[in-house]
Amino acid sequence: MNTITNRQAICDTLLAAARTDRDIVVVCSDSRGSASLSAFADQFPEQFVEMGIAEQNLVTVSAGLASCGKKVFAASPACFLSTRSYEQAKVDIAYSRTNVTLIGISGGVSYGALGMTHHSCQDIAAFASLPDMRVYLPSDRFQTACLIRELLQDDLPAYVRVSRSATEDVYGEDMSFALNKANVLMEGEDVLLVACGEMVPEALEAAKALKETGIRAGLLDMYCVKPLDTETLLAAAGKVKAVVTVEEHSPYGGLGSIVAQAIAAECPRKVVNLSLPDGHMIGGTNREIFAHYGLDAKGIAAAVQGVLG
Image 1 (spheres, rainbow, N blue to C red):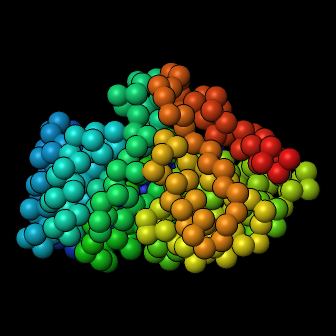
Image 2: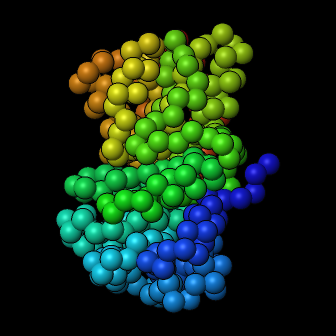
């Protein structure tokens, strides 16, 4: 079982790049430990800024550093980054088109039993609605590393959400990666699963289980929620009877909404969204919450069987 988190993959990738690029700067809001960025702070103290518990300042200072030519990665718990500092993200990052990658750590229900104050179940909708803001939810450590390396090469705003816990490996070190292109993990003729982030390993396990029952499920890893890879989505959706989206997010405004809108416009199919509920959730670990709301492999497979009748 993999024990390397996506947040650790971010730190490792930035550490390797910072050895030859002094313009890389990491900014944290009293979250270097939670973000697994302590090693970066220790090795490159002159390229690390600790803002304390001040998420609005975190974003504004990051924008200022970027305006001076720095490549800024600003890390903070997703629940606070997407709410407390939303205006700053809107104006100082998106509107101003600054070279800042906002890293939402412990996204979704990663904080589990801490409850709704620490859950970030609306962040995809919030950031995807900002013009010029890209939204990424990588599924495993290998994809996360590839994504960060690509973001180091451009100068556009982005929001990257990662989980607190390690996810099962979906890819390997030699994975093929293209920025803003979904990965086709399985081809299908009955149903298409579209997942992002921590839901991808669960959807992959579900698709394999469905295959054993005779249901041919395709699977897209739509790590690039915005910009959505519409071309790959429509090509895959055109081969199946129904589409099922899977996300660790509110049912409104996230991956399911964006996918349904694209399919309705170009390739009408039944679309069912598996998500967290629109309401206050139970307490527990993230795995317990996934199982309770049908977002684990067993629940996803059961939902697909229900959709296909």
